[in-house]
Length: 310
Image (tube, rainbow, N blue to C red; front, side, top):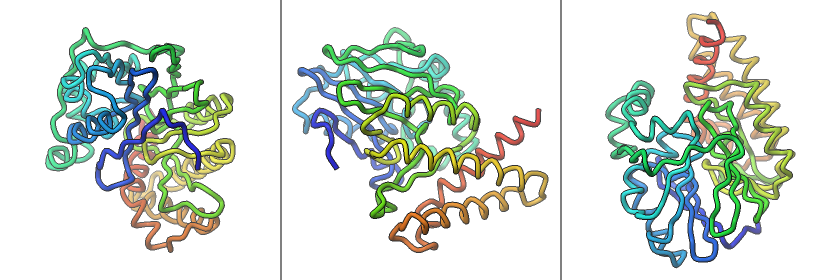
């Protein structure tokens, strides 16, 4: 699979290898990070800079796709190491980077305090003077290379994607789903949507996916995990599954065992699609590989059902 030599994939080592990526773009001796992983990933981010032949002083930007902790939890700690960098973030996400108290509390409600401490490390504030709010259409100038920020709600209301016209690639955070290399087959990448709590909304997500496809990108750089091509086909797969997930949510709603119903039906959906895709793993291995995502998708669908009812 060809890729742009100015774009570096960084494995943040969150949960396991090849699960959570950040990206480094280098242009004319200047650098920008797209997402940064957790506080525990800061050494990996700095090591990637060294491998790319850059010093921390050469980083101009840290652009966050959204402020979920697996994408942005390390921003405050990393910014302390990048003396010239500015943080670029969606308007809805900016307050949580300046004061992460509510962000930490929300994640703790989902994962528990012990898991936050074990997996995420320190979550520090970013000084307000170093935060740039990226409205839809905001352009980041990286040494003459334009990075266009696009408002892409659906996974979260504070989500943006980054269009890099130079490489004809889009950095998608979680808007364009999850695609783990262990599930690739001769047909290419296997992909699933992510509805993790608490702001999943299927209709905006469909529109956001369509907006990305309209750019005609050669590739998408997913946080979970890595570079994928054949974007129109993957987008069609995602929309089919969003529709199926909505149907599952409606069918399970009102049952006393709603969460168990959601988990079982999502597991069956992804196993069936993985088999049809020719994935090399059997059903048990697919369920194991996607266990955390299935749990979070079930929680996200439940949040959407409850919010939609109000």
